[in-house]
Image (cartoon, rainbow, N blue to C red; front, side, top):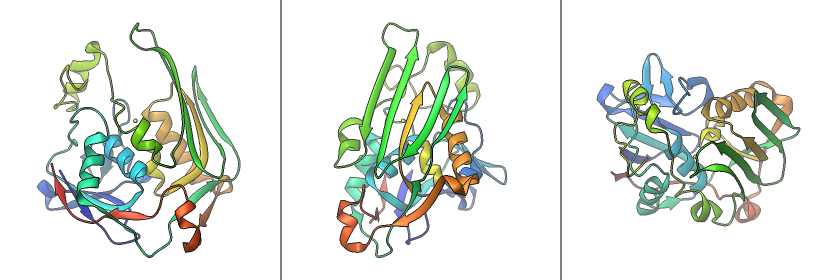
Length: 251
C-alpha cells in the first residue's frame, strides 16, 4: 500500500494498481458489504477493510489523497489506525489554498435497530460519544467520549485496536478478510460523507452497517445539514486545518 498526494477537491480515492489503476472513490455510493469491515465496490471491483485508513485521514485532517494498493484488502497491520497515521506524518502534510467545506448538522437524526442506536446532533465542533456492550469479561460495557480537536485523535483514538472473537475467525477468512490477522493484532466510516462534519455523533453498540446507514441518511436528506466554510483567517481555529499528504510513503 502507498499513499500519494492529490489535488484539492479530489477527496480520498483508492487505486487498484493490480487492476490497471482502477479507482474507487471513498464515498457512500460505493459502499458494499459492511458486516465485518467497511468495503467499497465499483463496477464489480472490491476494496475491503478501509475503515482504519479512513479514520487516520479524518483524524489527521487529510481531505485529499490517493491510496494505491495491489490487493482487495488493505493491510490490517496492528489492527489500529496508528500505522497509517505514522505514514502520513512521515510523508508530511501540506495545507491547500481552497478552504475546506464542512457538513454542519442543522437538526438531529436518530436511528435504532433493536438495542443498537446511532444519532447525530447539531454542534459547532466534531465530537463522538460511543458505547459498546459485549458479554465478555475483558470487555463488558464501556463508554468513551471525545471532541476531535487539539490533537485528541492522536492521543485517544489512533491506537485503538479492532478486536474479534475466535469463533468468527474462520468465517471472516472465508470472506477473504483478516488475512494479516493473528492473536497479536486481533474505529472512520463517517469519512464516507466526503466532507468532515460539524456535529455530535452518539452511538451505542452500532457497527459498520449502522455507521454507513447514517451516512446515507444524512446525504439523502439535505434538510439535515448545510455546507459551510471557514474564512482563511479563522481556519486555525477550525476543528482541523485543511491539508493533504505531501509525499508518497510506502508500507
